[in-house]
Image 1 (cartoon, rainbow, N blue to C red):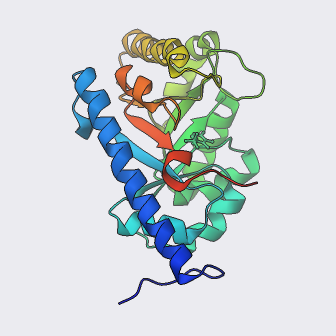
Image 2: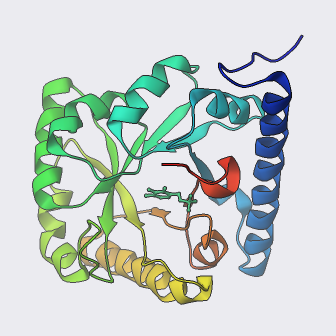
Length: 245
Ligand SMILES: *Cc1c(COP(=O)(O)O)cnc(C)c1O
């Protein structure tokens, strides 16, 4: 039986997209394996999140039919129309900056929210979770480079707010997430990834908690991130292609 054809795409275009996405996924998995070998890690520790922002539900379905189940979106407005078009067995990760007025919508649909970037947002999310009867799994986004264009806790803020964050009874805080400054050579990102891992280790020992998840690494730098301890990598361009805005 022929695969369903997306609207507006010819059969042959659709076939080319299917084979690209399948091939890209298997190439990424090979590169993940090599990075694991170099750093003596078990590939089973690492989750590949396919970031489908700016790509249609049909492309997500292609990756799903190739056996992939974890997907990332960064805007509720876009995710909202995509999620209902796809099987419920997909797992969605919310990776974009989260506005307060979207929290209520986002909470029920995502298996992990990567982008809790302030105590204020965490407190609000905790209150809504109580109201909705949910116990969301979340990550704290950190911004060690202090880039103004990006959200996230500085190391100082995280030290200061950690006790209050860890007391929020409805949030399952699983670890840290980061988007380091854009660099030309992925080696330049290594210090940020390492810094996030060390910050995680510090918070763990100061507060006697475990924060097993480190969400870091994108198309350009995921191998370095794996070498520095990433457990979740978020890859868009290298799976789905260049985004057109
Ligand atoms: C878009 C995005 C990614 C994926 O980036 P690529 O370079 O396309 O792999 C990862 N994380 C976040 C937070 C993003 O917004």
